[in-house]
Length: 339
Image (cartoon, rainbow, N blue to C red; front, side):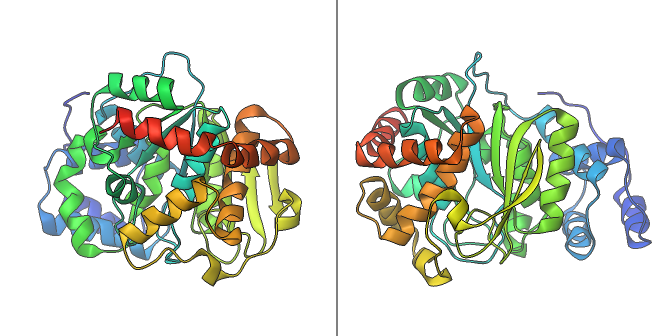
């Protein structure tokens, strides 16, 4: 983790952005470092975040922000383990249960290593950190704990504030705003373990394509999903745009061998505890048919991305993970190593 600081005055940056100018990748990197090292006051930070709520972010700007975050983070070395991160940007406003977190344990139970990066919910009731904490998980910043957890259970979890300590200077501003900011966009791009594979759900088609450019530029092996009705995951409520290194395609529930669902089927409840119960019920094969199918859909894509296998083969592995008890076992062992 380096300590270089920013020298760009925020007043000058805001003036340029308000005039519809854009930052270069290096400028974006330097400004983000300035935010992270408390060189700007709260009003300036809030103004900077707000600008990006009102205008589109460019590829080079997001790449610069990502560069700074990865330079400043506490790294986790997986020692050659080819893991996948299942992560959504959040901010889709759909109030679903923790689909990607649940699918992560199904994926781990299927024998695919998972290095998940997550945080507390900002614009939703239950982020991945909320639901895991409710299940008894105690977060650690020790990279060796991550390695042991991954070896034993097939999954490790990196609570973002622990691995991106510089972000503590903007956390309270993000919370007070209570809105989706570009930090939601950054989450899936700044996993401290830099996993070999990424399944990422995004809340807009524009952002899906932006991620595609960034992952292509980085040589990343990835699958980006965006449900056309707004979900930041495969929702099975309609068509889903899938972007991979091979190109773009539209997925229907039938493509994955699953049924169409309605929005109300995916509701996550009014509390973190309700979301946690759905997670454990689905892993144990006691969730509703809709809950299980949407989790299977996302685990299927994760398994197919990691193993380079057909969807029907990946779906069979995901089903077996639940039916055999392997998904629940992955959660049980994970909590033993993270409590």
